[in-house]
Image (cartoon, rainbow, N blue to C red; front, side):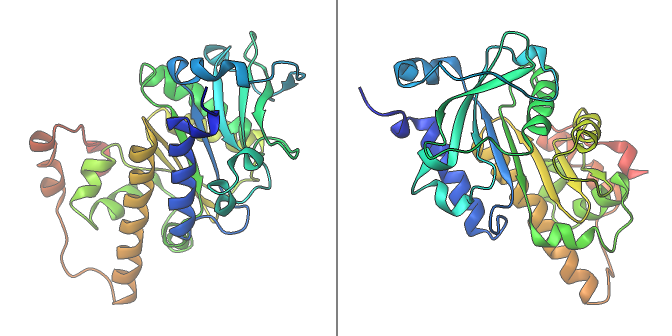
Length: 273
């Protein structure tokens, strides 16, 4: 039997961590990643998991995630080390029958606990599972510099941020047609940031945390990484535009809206008014 380290979902998880680190989005131990594992992916490796650990409170209750398994980065662990030594830097956790506790069943071999943002990840996984009929499985939190920079100069308003980012590249309204949700600064890992993010993620796949980073949800690793990448590239273009003296021309609301039909996306027209 092959090792779980060689499982496709584990390798894909490690690749995303490496790609995101190489983009400069994960300095030191910054950022975190989680994946809701499919039953068929984990089934061949169940004998390699340990079910002897004690369940610990999550801090939130996520009833629709009961008995599910997640692959998550560890607290204080560095994205740059995941690919080379995944067993010491990530964990597979199991959610209990009540949806209010978890235990580590694999990984963090040298000790440690899952990311400090675990309650935020799980409550938002819970919402996205419900909202997407189970399609979304990945949540990624990164610290992309240009997007963070914009939180110091743009109003912390979802409509303003969405419209500004949409105008930077034609692909943006197609890739994130619902726009982005924006939150003011809050203490990382707190109940407040978990609950406020959960409110926004009902309508958006991208949440911008002011002066902190970006929180994305997607169906798979490529989609989620691509979403983060698109938002940050748009932010980089906007930073350059602002440094050049601002826009002289741009896409109109009608231009953006006209993308809906050809690309079969439901662009949030409330953000075009």
